[in-house]
Length: 307
Image (cartoon, rainbow, N blue to C red; front, side):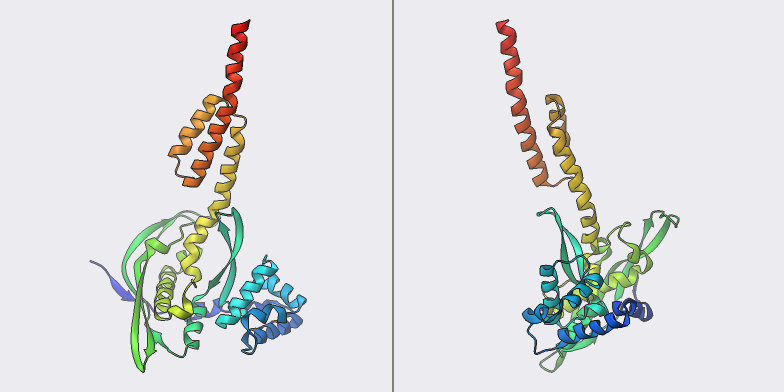
């Protein structure tokens, strides 16, 4: 028997998360933040022209606060998206976060929108008519491993959350409902800090983002809330380590004997730590190395026969 219930949103904690970064800056920097905000909000400036309206000190200020580590090209795209969607990065409505690009093998910056940003975009359409609180269906217990300053414990989490968003269409109020499941979004113990503190709230946010995107597809298509991407972030966090391990194995090929190469190849074929492309590349490199070793062996046999 499943347990369905509605949980009231934790408004005070949400407000804490919206505190602008400018509060941590000097008075002069806070003034510059307000200037940047006015540039983003100015509807007479086209999105593609925003970056050019920023002074170099303002660009560097953004890089030090809400777009740490961004290149000029990444920042140009970021402020263009902020302008186009009328989102304020200093109010944490939108973020520029690091992501691991497995194809390129490098870390890149990705744009994520907070749930507040989703709501702001929907409200800006003039058709947003609010939403119901999340409805949670079923609960499970998960094990949280011990941390540096905490003991292992069990945590009660929701199995799934459903949110309904309302939109005015041709004068009528229509409902758009979406459901998210814990098993699909929980990022795991390493990246799940907030999920361990507010499991219901976090899953509720993913459901709300899904419902908002369903209700406002033209405005929110291609945009994802941070909570929706947490699981991908957890997997991405392991990617550099996995790449380093793979690169180390490739280096070992050049020093391995024929017998060791055979063992490497067999273990790689059954490993679940590496991608299909990596396995294919590894097998090719092993075969090439074995081909290099083979002539030396044959040459040695010929020399023995001549003597």
